[in-house]
Amino acid sequence: MPVRITWWGHATCTVEESGVRVLTDPLFAGRLAHLRRRRGALPPPEAAAADVAVVSHLHADHLHLPSLARLAPGTPVLVPRGAPRAVPGLARLGHLALAELGPGDAVRVAGLRIRAVSALHDGRRLPYGPRLAPALGYVVEGEDRTYFAGDTGLFASMSAEVGPVDVALLPVGGWGPFLGPGHLDARRAARALASLAAPRRAVPVHYGTYWPIGLDAVRPHEFHAPGEEFVRHAAELAPEVSVAVLAHGESVVA
Image (cartoon, rainbow, N blue to C red; front, side, top):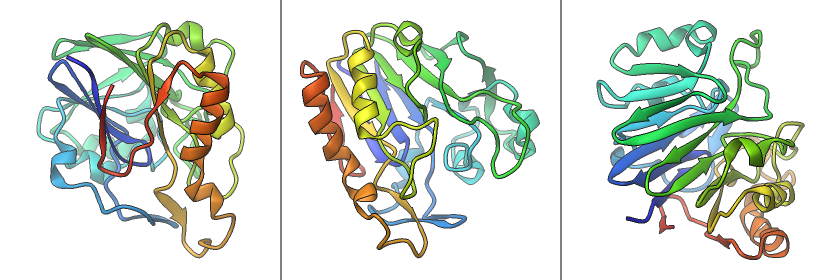
């Protein structure tokens, strides 16, 4: 059965693999600190239906406690090793089954193997906090292999750590007009795609959802354009890969 990808906005996706729903970095908020959701309705209640959720790193737009609280009791949630110590609020989510992973660790959930891989990104709980947990990506392995990169820059061992994949969910933007180190823009994401082994489909994520309040007129192309720019760069650098640019709530069978 082909894998089905639904993008809910930002880095939140549902990966349906072999009848199992894997939810990535759940974020169901209309506003988060100085950010507001500028495009797309809030995800519907069924977006929180998951057999397992994965959290890539501790930033509040990826590890969002109120969104995790919406998951059903007993839902396994994979987090970077050290997350409970760095984010004490996770202790309030006692209805969830937390499991801590580091790069190279793997667990089996509902018949799937989910493997954690490295990410080049600041994994701290910002705007404060020591480096207690790494940033991660995840490879979901069932009949297909799906790579969710989380938030990352391009790094030399990416292809070797990730291994062969069928589908790549890659961040192509951010939530502000400038991207610092440890991020992929559309061009670098296309380079990352070209470095991966054998993907047949890519889906750009982590753009066009949240934007700082009051900055609507500041470099608006950084909000709207990354998805289509990724299509253009991927056609040049990885022409064998089909790219699906999704609207919020839209799905693609890969």
